[in-house]
Length: 311
Image 1 (cartoon, rainbow, N blue to C red):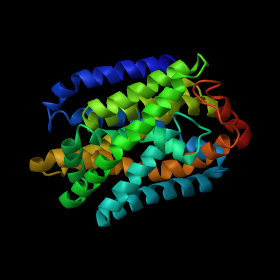
Image 2 (cartoon, rainbow, N blue to C red):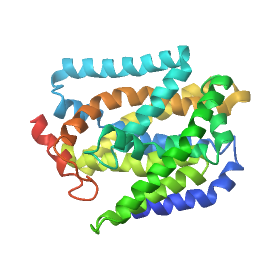
Image 3 (cartoon, helix red, strand yellow):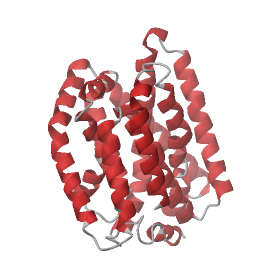
Image 4 (cartoon, rainbow, N blue to C red):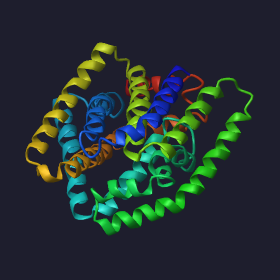
């Protein structure tokens, strides 16, 4: 409940400050999402090695080295595919993100429900911020393809909003007092996605809702203390900022805003593919064991059993 309250408060703050932040675009406004994703988003994937060791039997230096090489090669492959087929890769990344975000709400849900709960940050900005959304897409794919994708989201957004409001009504009718946190979070997420600038909404949702929840579940599941979590997060985070600095050093100053957007989103797409391959099988095993809201009742009980799976 405390996390839901914090997220709701920060979502409201983002909505209120969104017009002021938009006035700082393209720079220095874009530096905020880049820094936030680097500091708060990247560490949530820093435990992929621990997942591999504990849950996938990656033991010993040879297997660990092979895992790391495969991880990096898959990320590089995503970048290569994006360069050759940007629209297809962007659509796959958005769909994968919606699916992955959906796991934060209901672990035992069907694939359709997970997409419903994970899609607001991807689709709902098209309701009131279609031009801004198209501008973001145009930095990632050709302008004509960005316009086509935006039109698709504009058509889908009212349908998704209606479905989400019906789902909120179902939550509100529940007699379980613990549902209140889920309902508050649900409504805050919808409001954030509809009212804030798309990039700011995505940053807040990714860094404040998804990343901390994933880190908390993983820490308890893998039996890691805070010091171990910090050690695991330091190297990937430092490496990310070093890579970003190298990338920006070679960027065209006249197109720095587009370069920053490509850095954030293509980088996220590249890391999302191996991250999901490591984490999603574990989530699916746990999903088969429960149909309950994991952040309402025994939020980490399912993932704690990962220690038994990996033993």
